[in-house]
Image (cartoon, rainbow, N blue to C red; front, side):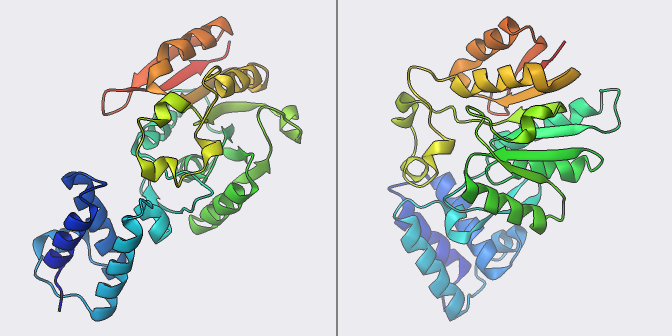
Length: 287
């Protein structure tokens, strides 16, 4: 019978060409947790626990897929974001920890605003992780989530049901709006739009560039702020007075995004670093 320790050894050897030891360890822990149902504490405390033949076989199949570069989240079909479960597949980006920081910033900002409720619009919702997390934490708000991808919206709707929240989903393109969203105003607009340039792509891990949806990642090299411009223009007309705009950004374009928003007469524009010390998010307020 194979033990938890055996699996860690096997995964470390099988993934050493794609991941460093820390990443390989985290992936192994996630796989064992999902397949066995054991807590992370139990896995770490009792490495000599034996696994069933079925569990061993499933973990070996997962390792075979991991060797192709496929992300563990897509293999398992689930991930966690802001303490909530989310279904993921190649039609949506895998939620990142830094986006949790953006969600937290929205929640703390709402606490400082003179309003008990309002409307939130999430542009480019993908898996729905931002919109659903905000609805879970700010239940009095009406939350609307928009995406150009019908497949992504299908996944986002499943995630709203999974987390038992009501979110309105709209299929539309911020670069060419056609839905009735153009007739509404919101107290908060938030977006984690595509912001990866072709140059950035050369520096990225293959498990991102080969598997995650390109339409949700990449922007033209000659116009990397195309989505920020469109969303900022939309926000100037569709935020209520004093409303807030939140962006997740490419760390290389913090200054450019700040200038863009100030040129469009937003006030209280603030650039914030993530926990890794990278320029990662922006908040601005409409006059």
